[in-house]
Length: 452
Ligand code: NAD
Picture 1: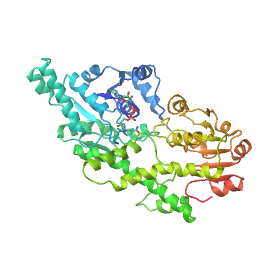
Picture 2: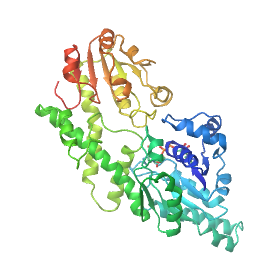
Picture 3: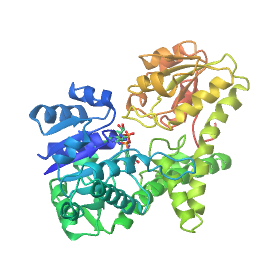
Picture 4: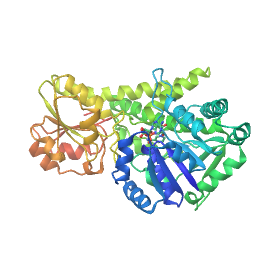
């Protein structure tokens, strides 16, 4: 099939590359010229395992194109995916300006009736807004005599469907190629069938296609993210209780995870969730509920607990040192989670800024996110030094603080660490190590949900 993906970010690039991998002709569009020029040169803007290879291969054989020219893309496709950002607006709701700008362009430049697919995470009712925006632009073209009534009628055959994306950064290619489920919200049977056919190669082994109406599909994405965020916040609250009553949250986690109704995923205690999705989607769902006249009690609490979690972890450091002025801390991990260079809403940002605000110095290391940190997220932050090797951050540091659970942090050389640290102290925001073992090795070890 002939597809365009508008917005070549985490979701758009993975979507485009994976559809191309199945033999479709895909045009990826972005307004960011630098990004598009780099992609044409084989420079991939994000770190995502497995992505570079399929982008390069498909670009080479011509199944994947990159352009800033949306007119060209629309002319040469039958299905158009909208995959632009929907950041948090001032009132907490999803800011739809980028989605609606694309809808406007579609109405302005469409030459034949298209299936428009909302892949961005958008509030319930957005498909209607996209439809209205496109229609309005088509009417303007009629007024300006760019379209005849007959052509207008034909173009009005376009459809808008919802296809929320459930990929996880860090495993996005795998998730897209082997999805747990593909949700399509379409009110028109023909569009539903076409989307089913498009996704059929990804769901060969068993049926993973879930068809529903557009509004239910739009809400499904928010419900999924809010449920996962709820599990995290619940576990973080449970960790505080465990610590206060002298229990060990690591043992409680295994104790409850073994119940198949609960399961092991998303019940790890830590420094709270971050990233480009959970924080903004939880907030947007809260706004959706309030606008619909429903008081979102659980959703509000999920967000509140998450914010407090970073402070709870920070307080462990402050309580231990009292005065951290001129103390140096080694930070292991900057990205909001492992296997990505994404630092949007990363807990490391809050923790580093709070420490520096109190006069501390930071020595940081991350396997993939240091460029993002240096050039963007922590660009204006002074008193932070970056190292290419995790052990080098420890030299003369007063403690090591583990913020992101990259695999390479799981079994470090503790003897080397002890040798380099000024004080053998570890604050572990992801419960990666065994307390008994570290105490035996002579470390002071602080983790989440276990009294020290
Ligand atoms: P992103 O910020 O990485 O990418 C968005 C891209 O859209 C940018 O490259 C930007 O330049 C481009 N863009 C903006 N306006 C444009 C326009 N008018 N025309 C063409 N390009 C335009 O965003 P993302 O993380 O890929 O997220 C996209 C959507 O997918 C969001 O709604 C997000 O909530 C949702 N989502 C994200 C993830 C994730 O893990 N990142 C997972 C599922 C769903």
